[in-house]
Image (cartoon, rainbow, N blue to C red):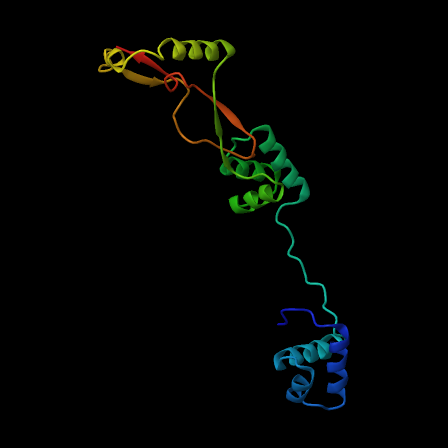
Length: 187
């Protein structure tokens, strides 16, 4: 197999020398081309009648354009949909596909699996209150902070499990609570 395309004139010279009866080794030394390349050019000329690189056959896509667009539409509507759910929806559309095929189709459309960026669930009032609290206790000593009782507290998650969520697009955020981790304190 040739790694780089030789000039058309050089290929024509190799074919004309072969027609005149010159041996491969002599041609390769005279033209400073590897012997395997000379043999490949002559084989190509014998097989197809010319030295041009022929177009290669392309494998047919498993998903049609219509199916790929339907998957992209579904992902843009609900970016947290999983590949398993997309696989079942592709079966419903009449184009059963593997998870890897669906993933490749989404990648081709510019959609990649990303971990959701977390964003604090704060209103303007929360931001002002946090700033005032920080300013109020800025000058207090460490002994004052040590007086606070921290021993018998427990947390209950308000916003579901604290796990990394996956989505199918780049710019995506979910609200997170930065005032205690989204939990209620019970004593």
